[in-house]
Amino acid sequence: MKLQYTGKTKDVYVLEDGNYLLKFKDDVTGENGVFDPGANTVGLTLEGAGRAGLKLTKFFFERLKEEGIPTHYIDANIDEATMTVKPATVFGQGLEVICRYRAVGSFLRRYGKYVEEGQALDAFVEVTLKDDARQDPPISEDGLDMLGILSKQEYAVLKQLTQQIAGVVRDELAKKGIDLYDIKFEFGRIADNNQIMLIDEISGGNMRAYKDGQYIEPLELEKLMLA
Image (cartoon, rainbow, N blue to C red; front, top):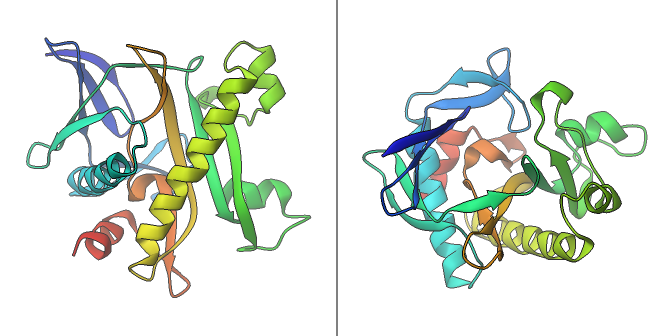
């Protein structure tokens, strides 16, 4: 097992069979000790966050498998906080794709002249470049195509998958009386056939969820969903 990449919230290893192993950490993104799924820095460490994130990720990836939605997930070991996944290549140097149901976070900061906090959005899809130095700038469909990162045909697939996956997550949360405000995904191309698929994770660390108008911390979300 060879260390391939050290990330903010997980480390990536290459296995002898060519698959990858993701090791989940207890670090979460945020600023000044406050969790923020859209932040570019590790803001705090929450004991048990790694396993909690993996449990929720396992739940959602297996749910997506039932729907026939392509992902890189193979299996997970909760005790070791690891997940085995298929190899994939990212778009450019990495994209983040956000699906928004409510105007909060960076969307509200940018467009606050036109929306009120918490205003409903119709599964608004936003793509940003993974670039910490430039604070993950948003980019349009035309920009992605012109820069050779993603073709317009691939963008259409990406948008459709984003809204479909976010819909599955939203519906599962709703069963527990939880409202999904926004969620962040990452996608890649599977090495075998270049099919676009969901990669990374689906956990409390990459979404904003509320219950009875109150924000739910990542660890609490896992408890509410998997109790």
